[in-house]
Image (cartoon, rainbow, N blue to C red; front, side, top):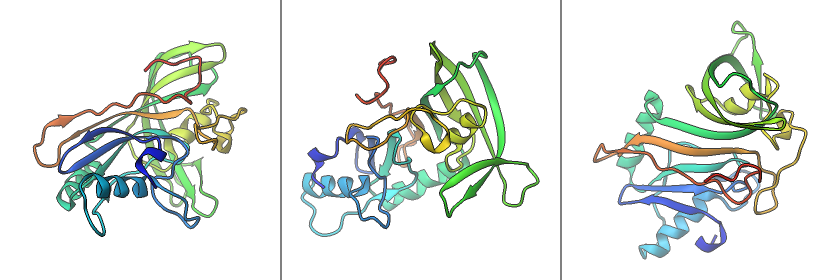
Length: 233
C-alpha cells in the first residue's frame, strides 16, 4: 500500500514511536480477507522513508475497530512496544473519544458500569448480568459537548478496555452511535473510502514516552467524513 493512498495522517514520529490518525474504513491489522491494513501502510512508509531493505519492525499495542477513526499508537522498536504495552495493561493510558449518538442525553456528565459478554463467533457484544459466566466488567465516563435536534455529541473516557465497549454501553441505554447499524443505529454513515463508518473518533491518547518518560497527548482532528452538523476540529 503506497503511503499517499491510505489517507493516514502522522501525528508524532521519532525513533520509538509512530502515532497516526487512522481513517475510518481501514483495518488496523490483517484478517482472513487479505485486504490492505494500517500495519501494511506503516511498514511501507517506514521502508521508503528510511531506506530499509527487507522486513521492517512494527509493534501494534492496541487497535481501533475498522469503522472508527482517530489516534492509534504504533511502535518502531521492541523496547517501545513492551513499555507502551505495559502502560495499557496497567490502565495508565488515558483514552478520549468523541461520539455522536442518536438521542439526547439530559445529564451533562456521568459514569456508567456494565457487564459485557462477547460472542466471538458473530463478533457481537451484549450487556449481561454480572453473574453470567464469562461476563467482564466495563466502565466509562462521559461528558456532553453539544446537543442538536435528536443527537448528542459526547466526550467518552473508557475506564476499561473491552471489545466494542463504548458502542455497546451507549446502545444499551438507547443512544446508539450514529451509523452503528450493528448496535441499533437507524442511519448509514460512510467513510471517505465509501465503506461504512460510525461516528466514533479516538480524539486523544495520553501516555508516557517509552524511553524519555515525557507525558504525551497526541490529538487527532476529526476527518471530513465526520457528520456535518458538528465539524469542530
